[in-house]
Image (cartoon, rainbow, N blue to C red):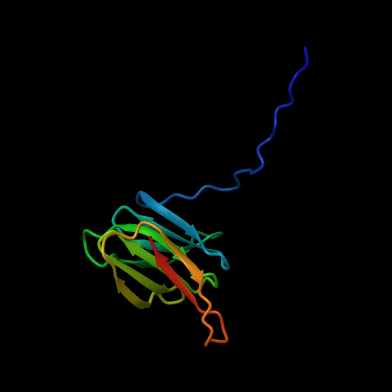
Length: 131
C-alpha cells in the first residue's frame, strides 16, 4: 500500500482584514497598492492594500443605487464604477473626482477597459465597454 503525499497549498494567508459593512465586489489596481471595495449600500471605498488605510469613500448617485461592476483603467489612475440604476461613472483615483458620468439603458453588470485603435490617432486610446 503506497501513501499519497499531501500537497501543501500554493498560497499562504499572511493577514486578515475586516470590513465595516458587507461587501459585494472588490477589484485590485493593476499598477498600485490599491483595492476598491463596493459595499451593499452602494458605496465604493478605496483602500491601500498593505496598511488597509482608507483613501476615500465614493457615495452612490442615489440611495437605491448599488454597484454592479467595477474596472480599473490599465494605468490604475481611473476607476470605472457601473451602477445597477443606469449609469457608469469614471472616478480619478487620486482625488475621488468624477471625471465623467455616462447614462446607460439598464444595469452595468460587467465593465472592461479595452484598447481601440483609430487610424487617425498616433497613440492608442483606452475606452471602456459596458455589458
